[in-house]
Structures are given as C-alpha cells and as structure tokens.
Figure 1 (cartoon, rainbow, N blue to C red):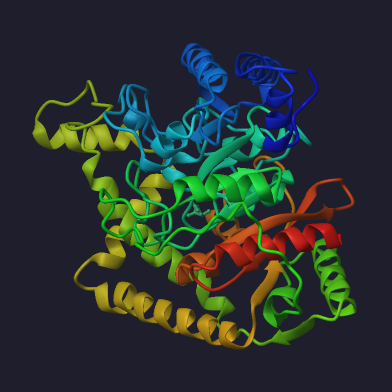
Figure 2: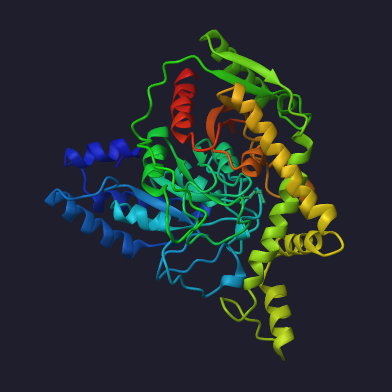
Length: 474
Ligand code: GLN
C-alpha cells in the first residue's frame, strides 16, 4: 500500500472501500516494523490497535463512526492510557501501569481514532535531542546520525516516517515545535489551558501543553478541535468555546506581521535558516502584507526565565516519585531514608537530577526572591511586551530553531549548549501563547528548516489559516 499523506486520503480510501481500518492498521504496523531502527516507538499496541480497527470498521458499516474513524495515532510516553504503561522515558516509572486515560486520548477514542502505540521521548520532557531516554535515542529519518529534536522526538519521527497519521506530544518549552522543525513536519502548541492536561505526566505545570504533530494543517486542526476544550478534571483548562478549526478560515485579508529583529540578528542563527526566513518575509511583502522588524530586547532573558521557572516547577512535580507510590524502588535500601534517596538517585538520569537540584536551589528560602520571584516578574514583563506587539501586529514570525538537526553527541557534555536550542521556542511558552512550526525548506545538508508563527492567546483558528496560506506561498 502506498503511504498516506493525510487523513483526507485515508477517508477517501475508506469511502471508496479501497481499504478498511484493519488494512490501514496493518500498513502502519508494517512500517513500524521496517523502521524499528529509528527507535520512535517504545511500545506498539499491536493487538489493541487491530481490535479497535475491527470495531471501527463495524461502526463504519453501520454508519455510526466518529469523525476520526481510520485515523491512526501515536502518543508520547507522557500520556496516560488506562491499562498501558506510561514511563515518561524514565527508569523511575518502570513497571507503572496507568490507572486512567488522559482526556486528550479519551476524546480521540470517542471519535474512533486508533491508538497504535507509545512514543519515545526525553525523560520527563527534559531535553532537545531525544538523547535522554531510558529507551535510547531516537534517530532522524532523514539522517540516521542526526537527532530528531526533543523532547517529543519519537512523536515527530513517527509522523515523519509514516508510522502513524498524526501523533500527540507535549510542549513545555518547545518540545513539539523544535522536533517538528528538525523532522520537516507540522507541530502545533496551542494556547496554555486550551487542551486539558489531565493524564499528562507533569513537568512544569504552568507551561505544559499537549501538542499535535501532523503532515497537513487540516489534520492538525481536526485533532485540535476534537481534543481541545474545558475538562472538569483540569481546573486550569479554559471554558472558552472550541471552534471548528478544521473548517479552515478563508485567508483573504492583508495582515501585519512582526519579525523580531534580535532573532534574525542572533549570532547563533544558521545562515540557511536566516535566508529561508527572509525569503518568506519578502514573499509576504510582495503579496501586499505589511512586514515590519520590531525590536525585542528581552530575547536574552527568555532562556533564564524559562529555565528558572520550569526547573522550580519540575523539582516540585517530581517529588512524588519517591520509590513508594510509583514505579521503581531501589533494591539496595535499608531504611526509609535510603529508600527515598537510592530510588531517586538510581531512577532519575543525570539531566533530570540536574534540573531537580537547580529547581530546589531557586526555591530555597535564601534564593527564592533573587531567582524564583524575580523570574516570575520577568515572565510578566515578557508577556506584556509580547502582547503589546500583538496589539499592532496579527502575527509574529521567527525561525523555530537557531540550527537544523545536529549530530548525536554534539552537545553531549555541555547542557547550556543544549538549552540554547530552545532560544526561539520558549517565548510562546513563557507567555502561554499558541505557536506553530511549519516546514520552510531545507539547509545545504538536506535537513529541514522550521518557520514559527506566534499569535495571541486562543487565536488557534487564525494561526491555522495563516499557516496554511504560508505553506501554499512557498
Ligand atoms: N528543551 C526544553 C527543556 O528541556 C523544552 C522541553 C519541553 O518542551 N518539554 O526543558
């Protein structure tokens, strides 16, 4: 069977009876097997997926199937799915079986999507290269020696390599957009609170969002309209009504686009990325849109703010993994104290421990004001500054990443070099605004380049419409 480039193709094939959900699942299972070396999946729900396909085929025959019938979805290993393990790529959750299903996953199932497996990621979502997983690294399907980005590397590669139709990831500081850019697919992070976080293993709760990987805007928008919306299990989820994002708004107006001068002038920016971003700006101008460079002097404060606040929240969230309640317990413990310390020391990786220590430090009574509360104030300043830009402009355009996919081990001994990869993605995370990464050509080595679009909170419909327009412009 040929590869499916979109859910529309699947729907057409199902309508014409050229295939069934069972043959679609078989097609993806075969792909997963032949691409096992990419290490995108940590578990394939072969049996459950086949059973669900049979059920959905039945519903199609009766004319009662939901709007995602025939869509095959992979989920990042941070999402709970009752009866299946969920480990956040960590040894500390070894043996843990989910007791409940994440609301986002539940809503997919209610519309008859088929969940095909659990996808590899950086431990607890901490990383930008997917080299930090207890299951080993994920490989970029375009170059086996290069990273797929992180932390949702498995989710990105699963869509890139046609191992599922769409996938779910999570984005705290860029973990959907950055791997989407590195693999040449679409990655959407909605407004904070747009999608319920119930059932998502927490990293930094005031930043965490579930995000969507797809090959087309249409598919992305369709999944968003199904999983977004208020959920009584997540008190922070928004009560704002969910639009029919998949009925893409017609894009027939002239818009105002801001480009942040400091991003294009950044010394860290790879030349081909700069060139491709500038070429989009030129095309937009040619089409009569207003494109203006604005100054964003706060760029240098983005990473410190993000890393202080996210590690603080992580140190609190991860305190629940104590060797008693979930997963791994050290066999070497002799008393309660050593049970805690040994289980945590052996169960977490170096990177996660580094963040817990950093987070505990910035929250400690002597340093709380100097770091944590200062960073909260800076977060507000960044948010207000960005909102100010968006009162004049409809969209902010910027590269998704400073570089394209890099080689394994390149940032190995230097955590700061790795954190710099998030330079352009954390702005939308710190402000809670929706942002999307769409493919924007390739570099000289043939690796994909991502273009990022940010807009005001809850304007996902506008973001999808403009992204669709941009993709057609290219
Ligand atoms: N790379 C960033 C980090 O390590 C972002 C991760 C994410 O969005 N989960 O924190």
